[in-house]
Amino acid sequence: MNDNRRYDYSIPQHEKRDEYAIVASLVAEGERVVDLGCGDGALLDLVARRKPAEIAGVEIAETGVEKCRAKGYDVLLGRIDERLPFEEDRFDVALCNVTVQMTTYPEALLSEMKRVARRHILTFPNFAYYKNRLEALFFGRMPRTMLGGYRWHSTGHIHQLSLKDFEALVAEVGGLRVTRRLPLPTKSRVVNALAKARPNLFAFNVLYELERIDE
Image (cartoon, rainbow, N blue to C red):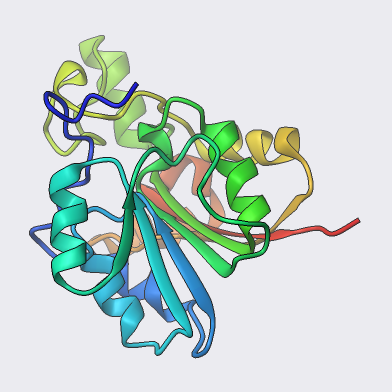
C-alpha cells in the first residue's frame, strides 16, 4: 500500500548531486529513457540535454511527481519494485539513482528494469565502505556516514548493501551481466585511488551498468 500522506521516500534533490552528470553522460542521443525513483526531476533535467527520443519516470512521492510534471516530464505516481506500467522493451535505458536501497523488493526492481529496457544504470551507497565498518566497530551502531548524517529510523534506506551483495543479487535475478562498475569519485584522491583497487572496501558510492542477456 502506498502511504504518501505520511512518508516521503523521494531523495532530497534540492542540490545537484555529484553523480548526476556521470549518470546522464551514459545516455546517448536518441535513446528512450525511464528514470525509476526520479524524485523532483533534477536528474531528468540533465538527461534531457542528451536529447533522448523519449524520457519518462516513476516516483512514489506525489510532491516529486508534481514537480516533474510541472517541468513537462511524463512521470507516473507509483512504486518501482512492483510491476511497472510499461510494456516489454519500452525503453532503451532504465535509470535508478541512489534508490535501490530504498525499495522493499530490490529483486523485483531489477526484474522489472530488465523487462522494460535492455540497458540499466544504477547507483547506490556502499554499506561496506571502510568508514561505515569503522563506525559500526567502534560505536556499535548503524553507521551515519552513509546516511548523510541521518539516523537509522529517520531515513528511507531500508536495505543496506555492499558491492558484493548487489552482484550476488544480479546473479540471483539472472539474465543480466555487469558491463561497468564505477566507484564514484569523492573529494579524496587517496580514497579514489584505493577504490579502483578495492572497490568493495573504499567505494563510498558506486555506479553499475547492466545489460540484459537475451537467450
